[in-house]
Image 1: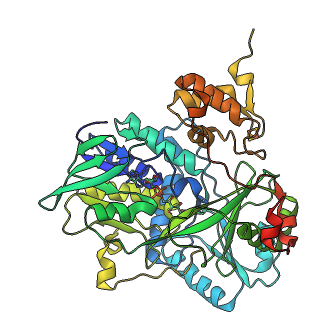
Image 2: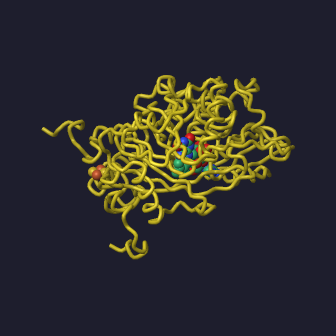
Image 3: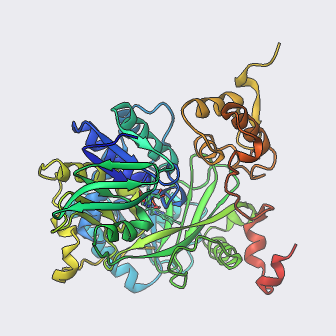
Length: 382
Length: 100
Ligand SMILES: Cc1cc2nc3c(=O)[nH]c(=O)nc-3n(C[C@H](O)[C@H](O)[C@H](O)COP(=O)(O)OP(=O)(O)OC[C@H]3O[C@@H](n4cnc5c(N)ncnc54)[C@H](O)[C@@H]3O)c2cc1C
Ligand code: FES
């Protein structure tokens, strides 16, 4: 590991990887990325890895749209010799309550205004897209064909390999233990494998973001919460889009490999760092998904696991610098959708760090918004 | 003559060859978890029961470390592949069903 750098990035998840790559691509000479474990060991390697433009709040729509633009050429841009398995077969989002349906109409209107080609569908039209769907009790659905999925391990690794090729120092099994400031400026980063002096530090520590922020005296209004997920054996192709419902609290998607990944959003899940998994989840998941997609009854579960969401009070990430700590930047609090935002956030953070005008205005996503009381609302999360 | 690496299947469930494993190691993977994430070896229906040792052996040979020191990759239940329909129909007390 180098003794000094132009920037140190903490976190080898997809967000840290994307930031390190973009800094190097934009001409920064010496970038060190510290990861206490190995690549994609935090939330990234445990996530559903869905990407969608169908959000209900303007920032999320803009960011996700730009990210999908980037995903479309990502493997090429990064010169990755394997497949990041990016597929665009859409998201089908189901409405089962009047309230939800009203919200979806508003969402689609906003999405159209921002250039997203989402559609409102009748239950019959939804069934044309997913013949296996049980539409009983459904009022309608929204659909957007540009939404999809990518492989989180390969996406992260593609960013890291490209960063390495550009001269980045990607250090696994290197934990950041302290950050030294001098006159309110980032000065030196202490790690389990030695010190690095650097004027810039990027916190992309995922669920541990608040721990890292504390190292520079910043309090983050975030909490972590467990989310469980499972994957089945690979089966013949039957499900083009991601199927999702906010009122039922489920998402379910077939990966290019044929296996089916699914999870539920359970508000009673423990907060904190527990990443165990429960039998109750298996049963609840199974009973919900078998009602929606009865063909799954005969499909076997091969693995279950859980990961952490890092939630902010308004389900939007916290991006950028913090007044009073020069050289400190953060990309944290992704509230369950950081995988899809990583490509665009990598670019935006690098623009901020290099003193350029970010290509999308994200000044409203700073930490200060909570003090200013400028909360945003995102109605569409699982 | 020994078979070529591309013809030797290490993980039957996921169709991963010795060549795939060696490529991942050659590109810097030093743990079982990394190899699993890159190649899918160990992610199949048998959850690595068949291939885990073969991957560990390859890694231990490459790193010159004894087998026990090659980090075991995370093991994720359920142990036996269960049908979603069977899980959905179950309404016995979960704690009791868990014993098998
Ligand atoms: C079950 C589940 C499903 C999800 N589904 C989706 C989805 O469909 N779409 C989507 O977009 N998002 C999804 N997410 C959210 C997504 O996983 C996260 O938002 C995203 O992965 C965040 O990436 P990250 O790089 O910020 O964090 P992480 O991947 O957690 O990376 C942070 C890294 O920092 C390292 N680290 C922490 N502290 C230190 C330290 N002191 N020193 C060195 N290293 C450190 C950690 O080891 C970790 O590897 C899901 C999450 C879960 C749990
Ligand atoms: S043989 Fe590798 S997972 Fe079954």
